[in-house]
Length: 412
Image 1 (cartoon, rainbow, N blue to C red):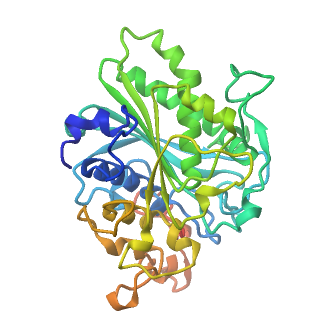
Image 2 (tube, helix red, strand yellow):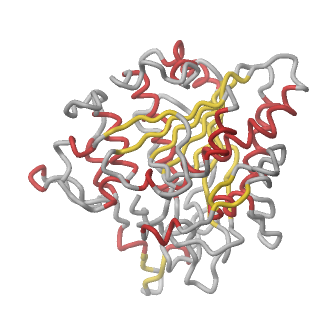
Image 3 (cartoon, rainbow, N blue to C red):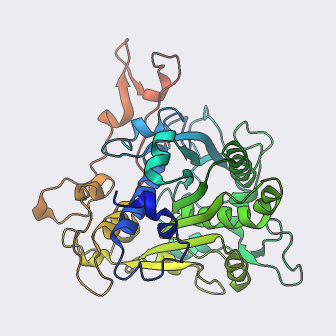
C-alpha cells in the first residue's frame, strides 16, 4: 500500500489534496480504494430481499462482517467493527433510500441498517500510521427515479447546528435531515437517531484512544455520501469543541470524508458552515457521465474538493446510457483504479480485479466473456428443509441457534 503510514495526513487531506488530484497521486488512489472497499462491505451485507423477514437489516453480525463479505481477502488492513448504525425517517422516503418489508413477520417495519463504525486493530495501526476510526455509511438501495426522488425542499438545519444564525440558517434537503435525525422510541434498533448513534460512538472511541494519535475517516456512496458529509460536519461543529476541553492535547489530526457519487446536500449557508471547520477535509469523487452528483438542481451547492473520474474511458465497459453503469460504486472504484489523468485516456494504475464491476451489473463488453450479475445466491436464498419443502433461508436456524437469512445484492 505504498507509503500510507508515512503520508497518511497528506492522503487524508490536510493540504486539501493540493497537487494530488490531477494527475491522481498513486498512494492517494490506493487510499481512496481502501475506503471505497469498506463502503462496498455495506452493499454486500445489506439484505434487500423484499420477501425476507429480515429485509433492511445486515445479513452478518459485527463479528463476522469483514470475513463473510470477502473484505479480508488480499487485504493487509484489519479493523474491528464496534457499532452498527440504524435509521428511520419521519417523512416517507422513496424505496431507493429506505426499503420496507413485505413479510408480516418482519424484524422491523420502520428501521433500516445504515452502516457501521470500525476501528483499526493494533496491527493495522502500525500499517496505517495511527489509530483509524472509520464510519462507513451504506448507499442507495435501488435505481433513483430522478426528479421524484430528489423532490425534497430545503429545510432549516438548526436542529443539527443550533449555534448557526437563526435568522439565516444553513438549509439542507428535508429527506437527508429526516433520515439523519429521526428516532423511533418503539424500535430496539433506533430508539436514538442515526445522528445520536454515530456521534455517541465517536465520542466513546475517542475517549478510549485518547492517548493515541487518531484519525476519523467517514465514507459512503450515494445516500451514504450525504450522511458522511452530514455526520462529519455535525461532529466537528457540535461534539469536538466539548471533547477538546477534556483532553490534555489535540490528538485528532483531522476528520476526512471520501464521498462517492454524492447528491447535493444543502445551500450556500451549509457550504459556508462546512468550510468554517479547518479540520474537515472532504473529497467528493464524481464520475463524469453520472448525473446524480448534479442533483438536486436548484438552490443547492457542492462542498469540499472534487476528484473527477470518467468511466467512459474504461475500455472494458459497455457504452451504455443506463444510469447504473455510471453510478455503481464498483464502476466508481474501477475508475479510481484506472484513471491516470482527467484529460487523458484510462490506464490501469492499481492492480485491481476488474471483474468486480460485474458483481451487480452487466457492464462489461461481451467480448471479454465476463458473466453479468455475478453475485447470485444459490437457489435465490431458498433451501430445502428436512421434510422436503422449500423455504427461505431466514426461516431456518444455524448451528448457533441464530437465524440465517438470504441476502440479495443491491444494484448499486
